[in-house]
Length: 132
Image (cartoon, rainbow, N blue to C red):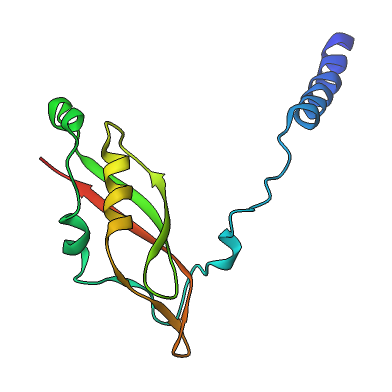
């Protein structure tokens, strides 16, 4: 019984020490991410709708051969002039589809996001469908 009490005390203590020693330091966003708003009164939209993004997609050969289908979620950073300065994968499906989605999102033009009629930088989440 004594060993059980000792184990009940030591185990959480060791887990806490392990967490403190091996924990990663908090990441400081230095890529300018904090300059982009999550929402705006008028959100950016692809000029010509999602069709303008879809026309830029080149279905990767590897994905065709492997019959990979699905939805890739891309986070696009839209500037005040409506251009996409950066794009990141939120959730991908692999086989080259993630890269194809990022390239298509970057190639498209957008209407800028606006707050009180003034263009602002906005983060925009876009679902890109890959279907054979």
